Image 1: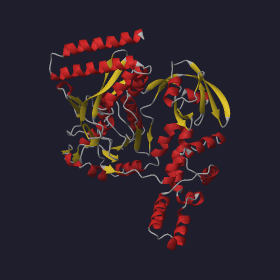
Image 2 (image 1 turned 90 degrees about the vertical axis):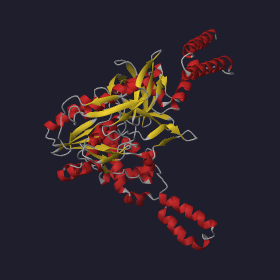
Image 3 (image 1 turned 60 degrees about the horizontal axis):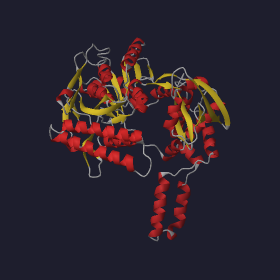
Image 4 (image 1 turned 90 degrees about the horizontal axis):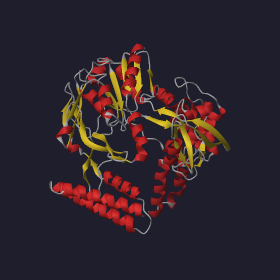
Amino acid sequence: MKTKKIIIYSILLIVLIIGGFSFSTDDKNFEISKQLSIFSAIFREVNMFYVDETDPGNLVNTGTKAMLKSLDPYTIYYPESEMEDVKLMTTGEYAGIGAVIGKKGDNIIIREPYKNSPATKAGLLPGDIIIEADGNSIKGKKVEDVSEILKGQPGKSMKIKIIREGSTMEFTLVREQIQIPSVPYYGMINDNVGYISFSSFIQNSSNDVRKAIIDLKNKGAKSLIFDLRGNGGGLLDQAVEIANFFLPQYSKIVYTKGRISQLYKEYYATKHPIVPDMPLAVLIDRNSASASEIVSGALQDYDRAVLIGERSLGKGLVQTVKDLPYNTKIKITTAKYYIPSGRSIQAIDYSHRTESGVAQRIADSLKREFLTADGRKVYDGGGISPDIEVKSKDLSNIITELIVKDLYFDFVNSYALKHSNIATPSEFKVTDEIYDTFIEFLKKHDFTYESESQKILEQLLKSAKEEKYYESNKAELNILKTNLTHSIERDATIFKEDISKFLAEFLIQRYYFSEGLIEYNSLHDEEIGKALSILGNQTEYKRILGK
């Protein structure tokens, strides 16, 4: 208790000193001093008199995060315990066993061990239930708590106890430095078109993209598909470097503007491009954000690439990581991004909220028109709009339920224990034998779901009874109910194409990891197919770009 009082009085003294220093400046600094004094007083009173024992660190951490949450989702405080998360965010690197874990019911399971990781080398498989790690029982723990246990010093061994198919097994792993690749896959789709999947703008990721471009050129690529779908962004300098691979030296890539003049900065291409003229298609979707939008937006503003897919997220805010005392950090929004045409890509205005505190998207009426280098019309205020829109298809109820209930995941894990291999990603297809085996698996697990037709019918029946039409139409309504009621035998035929598509993806990922899944999708993806069509028709390609 004595130690706690010393901490509290020390904080109060520091706050008062700061307050005394700021008090004489201006009204805003006076308000800062006033609020810090109030906060310090509340903090002191709660710690000294609250009915239950309190943790000063947790109180301040909770208060700090609540304060920052009122600004925007990207201004974040990182206590000392989360420094590994900061490192992973900027470098894609951490020390651990190299596996994605997740919650399934009351259990923590291995969802995906990375290729060539300690988890894979030791023999851990997707679906394994973790019951003990380094002598620590996993029962009742959260996913993030188990993740921390699995991380640790490279070269240090650990034991993991799991349950697989009802049997308890123990594995010894040696933790390694895990590098999550920024380019999980690249390759030739056909004799002329190269494809690069790019997942994150982390330290040195531009080197990985450079290597992929050069390698594909050497393999005969005459045009390129650059896939930024799902890429949530990252480091600004990497975005500028990557845009420079396609744009001329001295091109302005992006500029930033903040509340203070020192935050106005312009970023230019500093080198000669690697592929100045190679036809280029860039894929974006609603999860392409920040640095992804800088690259795709700059390429669109210079009419350098055809953008295909969905409107991007619209995150045009600049974050700066600053050091704080006691090995803590804050990632704070300091400015906004503007791409070469002058447009902002920010979609949500966090400075103006509704009475309930909800930030609003920038209204269409407030969006402004800009021009690309060749005079095409583009607009601000809501991410990057593709030149060719390909909307993602809504999932049918049966597919949604299969994914939500994890039945694809359960099946492929069971299937893989009985079958040591399947065809390569470039050759694989779901055969009738595999499909029938999956349908039998669903029957054994009593798979049921409610279709949209059933939901509408239930409402119809309810309305018919309320309006006294049910009895006179009972026979017809019951026939309709029978015809629309879920039937796995019937639905297996009706939805075979959709069910098979996702079944193939889950099987490929189980046997060939995420890299294999990307390779498989590069041959079966609608947006990639559209890109191939446009790149294969140079007249159409130039027309879209306004050449």
